[in-house]
Length: 442
Ligand code: DSN
Image 1 (tube, rainbow, N blue to C red):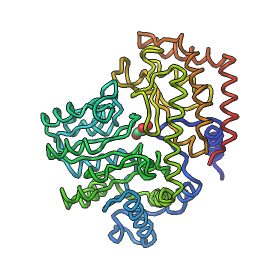
Image 2: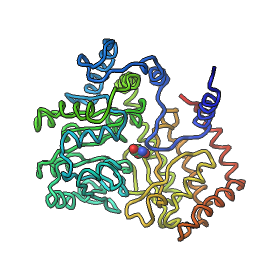
Image 3: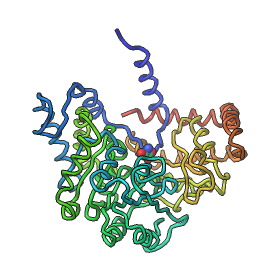
């Protein structure tokens, strides 16, 4: 018997992904080979433990798969140790806490509203419930030696005051390159572990288009499904510097992941990670990584030409963050996201530095180019997409977020209904669909 309900929904999602253009900075389209391995019989196996040390029999093939995945990760990022078993980014990051801290220890990470990740100590995350989380922010305008958004003197002063055991560097919404050496100096001065979460920029690092934290951090974590273009999953790595600080770090990470946090690894996922790493090791991936950034810069230029304000005034990676506060008013991100949905451009509303609204009704949007670049689009297409975004954002200017929380939902529903009837929206929707058709799903 066939489950037609789910089968039909997969078909519908395939159509959605083909018709629209995915601009969510944390997404990518994995290759057919990655997806094929993901749906293979490897999903049937239990393999608690690590290669050559399993709790179940019949793992001789799985051992080979996992060793290949580990070796490819080590080669791609230039590290002596890699654990490829984390189910995804959050357990990967939590394993770093378990390996380096005791409950209640102080940790530092970038604030969520300043672009940081939940697992870097945001108040509702287990990483703040079980550890004493102290958060650092970003400044609203770039400055300092690197013309970036970090006030290193302020972060250093905070670290000296709270003496963290662990410092995180890495973000989900940050359009500039990271200067990992600055964070390393601070971590070294206070004797903290430095963990670099490279989930967003891993593919750019692998392709040589973004600095690597490997010479500076003790531990590096990444998801595998963002710019790295693999299946959903994650990797935790220990660097030479990490080994020097604590030779037992690899064993501690392994123990934290299994049996500390997880049970049996998802072997189909491990194999698909291995395939993605194989693809990232090819020379063509370097070209891809460079194109992702070039596309983001082309998009940024078009948006600025249309009068939009960008966080940091530029991009040096795969994402462009638009701050709508002064052009559209606080909380405008929700209108921007919903209006672009109507023209089949998918992105997410996002907080901006100095956010005047809330994380659920933030004042900006984050726009990413990894998927469009995977589909073969270049600067000419970015210019077209940028022009449509500017035109749509012009149409949403009259709409303002109601002050009263209770009125917001109905107002937003009415806004969507209203805009869906707009002839310019309908025309732009057709333009995006036509563009999507020229660059089919990979
Ligand atoms: N949800 C991811 C992102 O969009 O950046 C982070 O985990």
